Figure 1: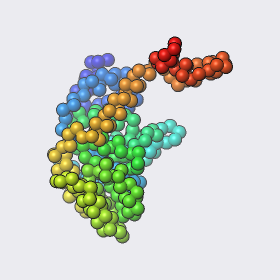
Figure 2: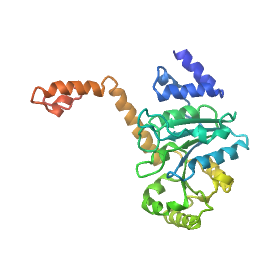
Figure 3: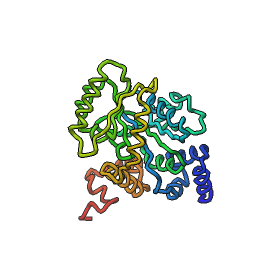
Figure 4: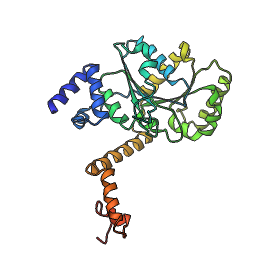
Length: 309
């Protein structure tokens, strides 16, 4: 098994997209050998992960499409991890960004993978860190992670990405007022998309004032206007992203919190691997029939919680 995983990893590193697709599937579904693959991943890769988030209707996919077009013209290799809302029935991706970005579906320098959020808060997939790390080892110049949306709980992207772009539209003026604290924590850059619409100028000015008020010396968050459908302003956005990536954000607090939470989840999952909810259901059902059921005595069987034995 280990030899097969090593061969898969080697092919993936050389740019074989079929091997990359298999590696992602291996990790996302925790198939045999996925842990061996994760241990092979190199961690000293150049920061190149771009998070694109924003409310539904902000034109995130159109902006992503325009950025792909810009970088492909420069002969760059681009990977897109598009996290879609899940079907409530089978947890599969509902939208499928491969369809929305169909112009690049077979492009040799572009790899697009749709993932389902599977009900996870944060606008991401539960395996997004592992999947992104896999893609980072496949030789792409830029990796774009597009989230389901943005909200009070959806700040994980700020810890995952090396540069987080928050896309907004003119109609989002009230939302900016509501989410001031949250979006300031998330954003490394704001993009006012659909800038040909009414009130685009007002939103742009409001954001400029907001970032100026919150700025620390030499670190004011950039704000751009785009019309992604016509490529207007996309060159400036791409240049801004590249500048932020080159500057690097090191081990910032957002990334530290994200990695700590992910480590916690993985450790808990590892320690609980021999226990299932269905098993607990059956055992609690039996214990309740004894009429002296105590939840805390019950879980003392699994943890040293009950100090009285």
